[in-house]
Image 1 (tube, rainbow, N blue to C red):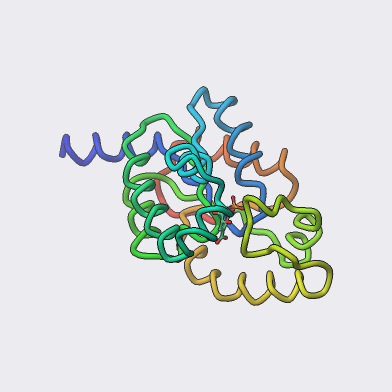
Image 2 (tube, rainbow, N blue to C red):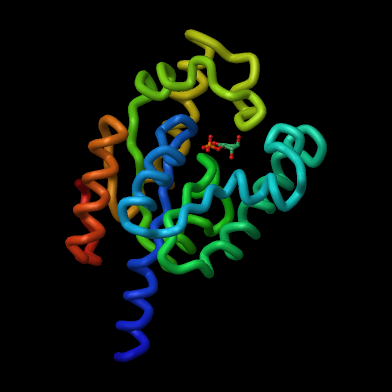
Amino acid sequence: MFDRVQNMLQTMNRIFLIGYMGSGKTTVGQLLATKLGYSFIDMDTHIESKLFKSVSQIFAELGEQQFRLLEHQCLHEIAEFNNAVISTGGGVPCFFDNMKYMNEHGITIYLKLTAEELTERLEGFQANKRPLLAGKKGKELYQFIAEGLAKREPFYSQATYYVSGEIESMVSEVCEMVKSDNPSRKVL
Ligand code: S3P
């Protein structure tokens, strides 16, 4: 019994933000961490600083498969932190058993935006962080996002909570939800 309660408390103190590239995980995560007094961890930044290489360089030099392995290892390292908001890379939930692992080690929150909203936000993206989108614009970018999102949706939809809308409203929704201390599955 004590173990279960202990585990639940630890789980509640770790928030994984998931969602497609451009959904606002980093911005929401930073604001949320400040509001909750938690530390903020960005998985891409964590990997980049460990390897002294940008995500783009890792993709180019080691390949996507190796990057996915690095993400998997990184997830296990940072899931040790308590009182933390963790912004995951857009592909993290879709490889290995990462989604299951995150659900077992924290609260997962899906920042659910439409392909139209994501395209608008990703026009002018930073190519060094998003090699998968490099060279894509307009209609081509939209199509890539719409197809990718459809493939990833079955993973993202395993999240405990979903939020959508503008950054500020997502932050307050998540804050309310965390403070309400309700560990049951809920779709906002
Ligand atoms: C990726 C998302 C990126 C980064 C890499 C791959 C993906 O992170 O990890 O470019 O596969 O969706 P963001 O979601 O923070 O852009």
